[in-house]
Amino acid sequence: MRIAVIGSGPAAVSCARALARRGVRMTMIDAGETLDPALEAMVDGLRKQPVTDWDRGTVDALLRNPTIGKEAVPRKLAFGSDFVYAHDRADWPIERGDCRAAPCLARGGLTPVWGGAMLPVHDRDIGDWPIGRADLAPHYERVLAALPLAAESDRLEREFPLYRQSPSALAAPRSIESLRRDLDRVAPSFAQGEFVHGRARLAVRLKNDASGDGCVYCGLCLAGCPLGSIYRADAELTALERGGAVKYLGGMLVQSLREDADGVELSLCRRGDGAAHAMRFDRVFLGAGAINSTAIMLRSLDLFDRPVRLKDSRKFALPMVRWRGHAVEWPHVNSLAGLFIEVRWPRHSPHWVHLQVSAPNDYVLRRLGLPLAGPPGFRIDPRVAAVRHMLVAWCSLHSSLSDEIELRVNPEGVGGRPSIGLAVCTNEGARHTARRTSWALARLGLRFGTLFLAPFRLTSPAGSTGHLGGSFPMRRSGSDALHSDVIGRPMGLKRIHLVDAATFPSIPATTIALTIMANAERIASSAPLD
Image (tube, rainbow, N blue to C red; front, side, top):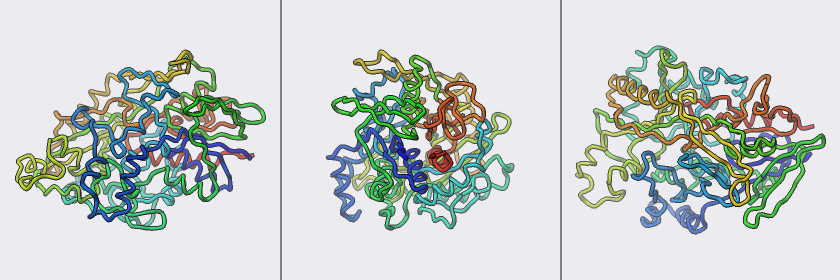
């Protein structure tokens, strides 16, 4: 049985893991871009030394992020590099105007720059899906059994099951623990099913084990973890390669798939010299990321110039001011989200609003013009006095309350190659919803000693966070070429399975990566292999 998996991000690797469990040996085909060797050497140098011996100049170079202060919401970079965002690749041309969405051609997908947040969906947010959370539950368990997880059994479980036995949590900054105590105090006063909170659930390794090093609380999390303590799909891919389950074919771009009675033929383009190749497989699992997978399928179905909508989850940052202040602990902390808050206003929407709350980190300090390693007078700087009372909430809305991205494949393209055109389709109510949500949070926060600064909301451009999908939504009974069945097969196809968020009928506000992995695991576990 010849099986191909396309892509190397969370969906593709989760799919490969499930196939390997079924005894499959597969070929993984991937563009395979990696971090610049010079930067990789710097990271490797830190990895080999205790954190107390790290060179300050090297750390500052890896923390470099020129988008901080220049863009409303800075882009997350991987050790100062934006290689995961394929904005301008000659062999994969994009026409995007002012649209900030971008495909990813990196080995490991977007995991080199993600925040590790892991939360399952809620049935209220997937009412338009042909499957429910119960269908995903065993696959959540399998995914979480294979990944590191820093989490805690707490109030969050009332609406969002943990799917993991006896977890342990990261040590949180004092400002996060103070907020949590205040939330615990007022939580009983909220209506059931409208407000829950708990420790952030993160794909972070707590202690050294056979899989790698544990977190050392160095504060570099938003730039990338030098020790690899934050889960990365490329690291798991390497383990699958070593185990013999995966033969990795990097440096290749899949142009199209053609299914016939005997299998699927892949048209490939080798990166660098543009040499064309063709390969045949009995079955193909496509998990190259929503933008890439959509473009590949549109070319495969000869649907050139047909506009397709990708759904997005609107994101915005809200500064928070706490009555009680705490010393700034960065960099001696894990700087990922420390707390999750899930809130619902049934009068306005049935869907959950998701908040990830973080203590002040290097992004905040740089935005305020504070040095990351200050002179002796640093601690008496009046700006430090202000930041002692500050937290930041990263807020997300359901796709029904968000803008969309229009994608079409232009056959004429750029330089003789078909190009991917991207444009923002504004949801007129999205801006109003974000503003209304911000002010609702401002009123709510007064109950637990917190002022959400609604007038200072910073909105992330549509599509820029990569939480995209819905171009080939799953249906029990499809009626369009752009529908797929419950195991990800586009209408009329038998041997091609989409396994990434392209199949999601909508995008929940809650974190997307865990559900992408669980759904890919579900499809790969149940797809016929005969």
